[in-house]
Image (spheres, rainbow, N blue to C red):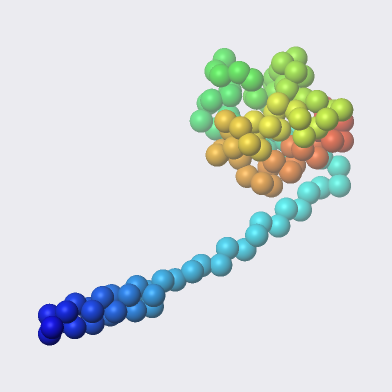
Length: 124
């Protein structure tokens, strides 16, 4: 009988210790501020240079599409990766938003790419 009480007491202490040690961290939602007019050269290429070309994955002569500064716009268009009629269905956007490149992108970059496509995907 005494052994059972000790085991119950230990179980209660373990439960209380577990509850007290739980700690939750508040994560602030990311606030995305986009430029009024998205520029391919000033806004989109830096995303590619930081996220896609830095490791050489989508650099010239590497894995398609070629997202190097000299070739990115032409390669995206020639490969049909941009859909200005249905921007959210663009293969480029789908890839970074929910596809194979999702883990390499951020919500800010995704929003920037989508807005650029929505604005007509100009080579500006």
